[in-house]
Length: 276
Ligand code: NDP
Image 1: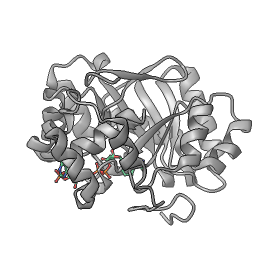
Image 2: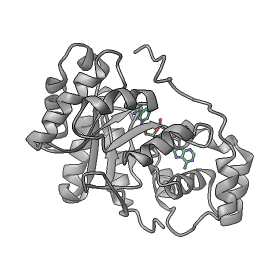
Image 3: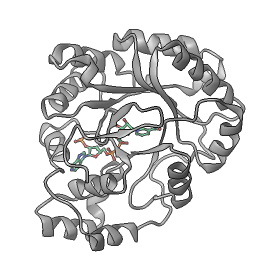
C-alpha cells in the first residue's frame, strides 16, 4: 500500500523513484512552469518530469534550486529528443539538459521515443552516461513490447523505466506483464487522459463514494496498479488535489471496474506511427 507522497518504487538498480511525480509537458516556459514546480514542491511532490522538447528545463532547475528543498531529495527526469537521436547528438543534448537544469547528475534519463534505426545506439550512449555516473538510472519512453524485445538483447543495462501513455482507456496488458517480468518500472504519462478523465461516468461515480475527484481516483488507481504516475497541472488547487491521494484506498471491486475500461484507445501519438 502506497501511503505517502514520498513512497518510492525501487528501480532495478536499487534507486528510489517516488510513485507520484509532477509533469510539465505543455507547461509554458518561464514564470508559469517556475511557479508550478514551486507549488508542487510546496505540496510535497519530490519527483519532477521534464524533457528537452518541453523547453522548460531552465525553469524546472531554477524552481528546484530556489525552493529550499535539498536537491538530493528530488527525483528529476529528463529525456533525449528525437532530433538529437537522428543527428547523433545525444551527448550534446544530454550536456545541454544538465546545463539548463543546472544539475551535474540527472536522476533518470530517457530515450523519449523509439526512433527507428536509432534507438539502440541512442540507448548505448545513455549506458555510457550511466557508467560515467552523470545519471543515476536510464530508461526508455514510448517503447512497446517489440521495441524492448529488439533492445534488450543488444544492451547491457536493462532500462530501469518505460514511460508510456497509460490510463484506463490504454492499459497495454502485454507491456504491463512484460515490464513486470523484466523488472522495468512502468510509468504513466497522460495519467489524467490529458484532462479527459472526467468524461468517464464510472470514474466520477467511484470518486463520489470516497469523496474524491475523478482525477484523484485515476491517480490512486495508477498507484494501486504499481505504475508510477506524473499528472501535470499549472493550477495550484489541482496541483494540491492531485497530491491528496494517500488517505484512501480503492476497493478490489472499484479497481476491477476501472480495469474493465480498457479499449486500447490512445489520446496522443502512437509509438509505431509517430512522425516527429
Ligand atoms: P495529464 O493526463 O497529466 O493531464 C494534464 C491535463 O489535465 C491538463 O490540461 C491539466 O490542466 C488537467 N488537470 C490536471 N489536474 C486536474 C484535475 N485535478 N482536475 C481536472 N483537470 C486536471 O497529461 P500530460 O500529457 O501532461 O501527462 C503528464 C506528464 O507526462 C506530462 O506533463 C509529461 O511530463 C509526461 N508526458 C510524457 C510524454 C512522453 O512522450 N514521454 C508525452 C506526454 C506527457 P491544467 O494544467 O490547466 O490544470
